[in-house]
Length: 181
Image (cartoon, rainbow, N blue to C red; front, side, top):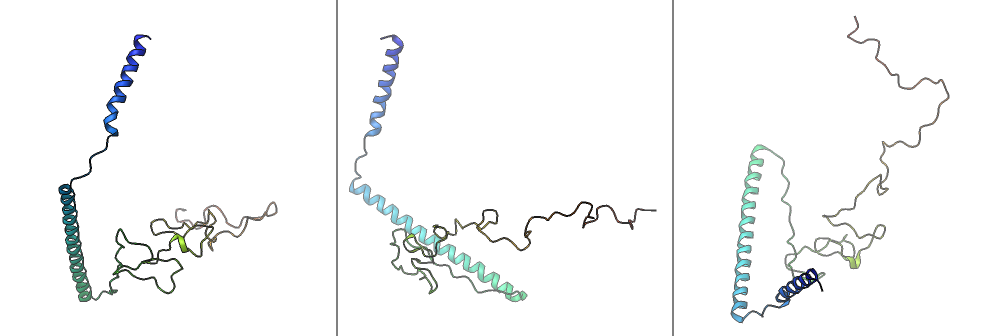
């Protein structure tokens, strides 16, 4: 072996031995560490709930202030929109949760809380695709052929006219131009 090969082999061996500790696993947390982590999670959840209540109260006060101002100034107001709460992180699909809005009578089969259609019972699919979610709506485009042509679209190709036919649109400037003297 040459010196370059030996140096390369030594470098590879050093790199491989340096990466061995990365494969080791951490020991399981002690009961005290687990209790501390659980207490920290509970404290974070309590703070999140407190912040959520504070935000809801703030939004309600702003809304009532603006609705009062609108009533004083004679503006037309609409009733506030009810927002359904999001399902908890560990919720099972299809199982009712407290505070969740049940799908209406016109909801398709497989609709969960909020009227979202799940893959299990998605009826009325278009071209084998599931209905779009609000974040990813189905794009309707005349160019792609997923939407009907608009009314102002030309019905067909322009027909040929005989040679020498006057154009239907007269190009040029009119005779009564104000710049003429």
